[in-house]
Image (cartoon, rainbow, N blue to C red; front, side, top):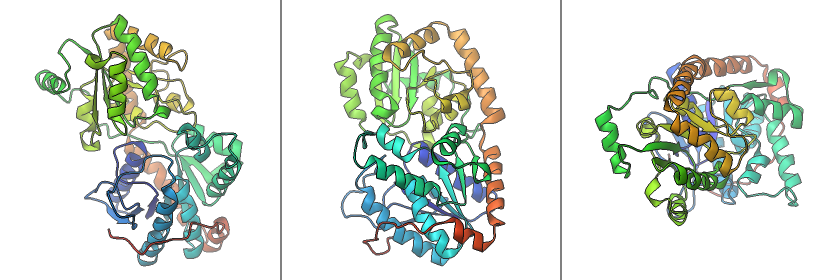
Amino acid sequence: MLMIAPTSFFADYGCHVRILEEARGLQGRGHRVTICTYHNGGPVADLTIRRSLGPPGPRRAVVGSSRHKLYLDAALSLRTVATALTTRPDIIHAHLHEGAIIGGVLSRLLRRPLLFDYQGSLTAEMIDHGFLKRESPIHGPTRLLEGLANRAAAAIVTSTRNAATVLERDFGLAGERVSTVADGVDTGRFRPGLLMRAERDARRATYGIGPDRKVIVYLGLLAPHQGTGLLLEAARLVVAQEPRAFFLIGGFPGNEDYRRQAEALGLGAHTSFPGRVPYGEAETFLALGDIAISPKRSETEGNGKLYNYAAMGLPTIAFDTPANREILADLAFYPAARTPEALADALLPTIRRPHEALGRGRALRERAIQHLSWPARLDELLRVYERLHGLPRATLARSSPAYATPKPTSADGDD
């Protein structure tokens, strides 16, 4: 398998976790996986990664929509073609829309099937991230580009059923071409009771958390579309009524900016922003929480952090979106509206009624074991692979139109 990952892989957040777990799972089933990605990103010792050339200077990760992606994708195109010519993959597995466009050209050239791993609408994501406005003159062309990327693949897997519905409703894609292969979680690694009481208290103390505090934990990207500012506004309302509340907010980027915002709101003694938490330490970080929260508001993107919350048995508060309902069913605490006031109103009774909260947490843990684990997800993905591998080569050439990709500007990069 040749995976195309037009992102700064590996960084410690949702999209990258899906790529990582899929690649590791496939290798565990006996498949060879090569990942083509940007020049920057953290190393992963057990995966074969081919990196494109990048500009000189610090290798800062690019998170979300960015103008830098134009030349990064051009360099990645060159690296991907060179890698494909040497590895001759059986299947091309593209992540994100830029990956689908690069993969569409490569699929046609090599007559290999292309699978598009769809994690949300490109246009909607750019709007959510503040990179694009609906009234912008480039909104229409971006939407057209998204449609071309969606149609470049012989098969699409979506991380939520809601995303499959969006593809059918907005782009006319349905039937066998679109399958849902949701995210998953390692329920052996992410589990309740990881830390003994003494160790838990000691670890909490390093973040300034006293033993009597009720810890609301968050781990993920920090950004407006993730609801970070909204969470802080809700925290201000919560601590005014419940001084035991403490918000342990892990993630990046901008953690120092949000720390200053919290202090300006009078939350200095009720918050901690430790910054990036390595994915390999995510379970012990989450084990410090009593309640988990995700104020993400997107209607089209998945929400991978919820899988980890559920596996840890953490009672969870999240907004009532289609993706969140798919993951947590009716077991989460859903605020009545997407406002700081409604978020606070959902948090306060969760803090004050611990027995009810623990019951929800146990039910989420059981749901994670039964329905959200990675082995079942790999079975679903491999069934799509098997269907793709059986397609005639002539069909593959017709199914992947030759869309233009940015012209590469760099020579081949190092690994």
